[in-house]
Length: 291
Image (tube, rainbow, N blue to C red; front, side, top):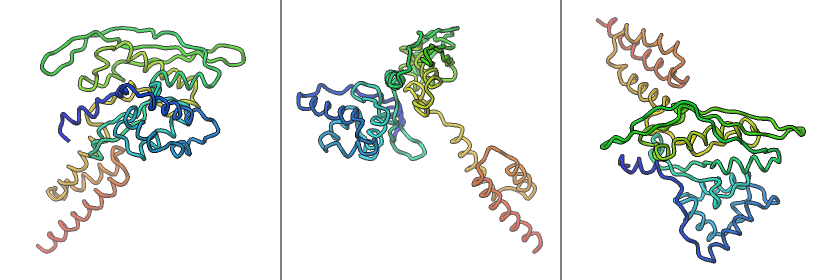
């Protein structure tokens, strides 16, 4: 995949469904009833859909998805009672550099978060985000643009317990969520809104952990295309392995000690390096004995 295609794949946002025909609108309502029907188990929901209904979902709210990806998506929608046609949940394509292909991730919108919280019967609303601090940032490769962004956003969500209204407050900081200039298209247009949604999602998870644990709002998952720490470690380890044959005896012994005491590498990586390094040491020592 070229860099341009990779960037496009990562930045792809859910596509607005084209105007549906009357027949397609009827099919959408049937799909919605399947999702809403509490007598249907989440694992059985996909099997209740006809092939035309599955193809309709793929043409609108889950473009390019495989049947396996769509089956999981429908199961999550059913389990969480989220309606993809109301933009409560999305199946978003992202480029996976490890697998070397495009994969799809399930993302919940802030409306979806609110809907799940409301279904508990304990959701008592929330305050608007409170923003603190500002700074200017620049973005753009050819033509630099400058915008003012908030340093942090704080949101309080309310939950009704035993007749009382309790606040659950959370703060999101720009430097922790801004995905960088390459991925920050929406952040550049609506910096306050995007950070506010992250803060609200954090607060909602605090208030309703059993319902929202493991779910993340779209803005929280817009990762930078830059390498993750795990990918950097993997690259460094691969380079280190390639250097074993060029290391001296002292260097090999020194690296074995470093690797043994490091918490940077996995157990499998440690085992692989130590095994190959010791094998190399045996060869070196044997060569010296022969001389």
